[in-house]
Image 1 (tube, rainbow, N blue to C red):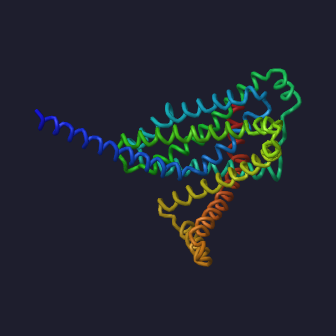
Image 2: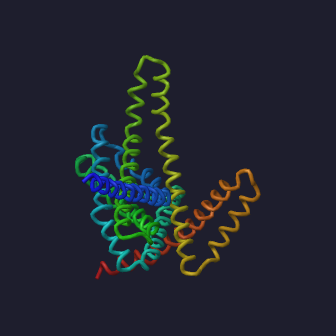
Length: 319
């Protein structure tokens, strides 16, 4: 009996070790995938706060919560099953889809830069009046728009994650996709909630009697608009860097290695020029080159969209 009990305990210990190893593997794979998707995560965190701007302070967190729930639904109910089906039946599509997402990221990044140079027309007075008369409708429109934008970014995050664990088992892929989806949603929208409420916290601190606390509060109130502007710039740069890098890597997969080799060679030369900071300089140079390439791709995509795709869609709509 005792020997049987010890054997059972030994089996349980063995299972626990396997489970612990599996957990470690999931964490490692999820961390690797999350790191690869960092640029998109930054952009997501930079874009989302604008959807809560202009509403009463009491509505800001409920709006962010609803967007977060929509984002989680996008990832777990639609994108995760789609990614697993893709991995099972058409793994060869992963790279082309990643590249298509990269083109979209480049397009969005280039559009943001174009908006700075040539601002688009703002809402008409009639549209502004309608929003003012029906704030509930405006809130619903903002949330729906945010969830649609999130779907594209989430699709790219899940595709990047899937490419990271392409050689893993089906169940490992499923668990890692779920962990990354939940983790990134929590990180992004937790950060967005803090950003959105930082100015309210600043106002509350600025009313305190203790001078250093008041100074901190005033600093938050004054600094948040500048922080949001800087975060938006970082998000745009991240879109171009990630999108350009994805396309360059995809071209290499299909045997078109010239751009990738040139980028690697220039980055390595830059790193060798400053040996003390070699790794950081090489990475930064590679990121800048990817962003420049992404800007070129985004510019081409803008021209194609406005002069080819939109006219065709309009002509089809007239018919």
